[in-house]
Length: 84
Image (cartoon, rainbow, N blue to C red; front, side, top):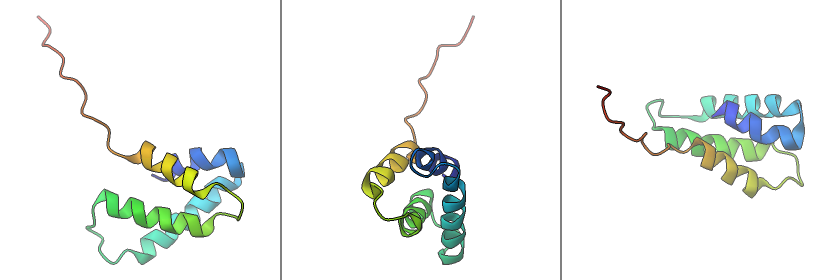
């Protein structure tokens, strides 16, 4: 999640993207009351914290959507026939 967000934000923030993402991750870790929460709950919490860290003027909705698309679970890999 952090790596994906950093990759998305580098386009807008350059090297500062890493620090913004780290701050959002720290805020997410400290605010999560349920450590056993699922991936989706952590992702949503992270995105909320990330949006609070971003400077004004960035396309926050586009950034959020891109991160969501890249972090969502992918479809299962196709089953390949056994080799003979």
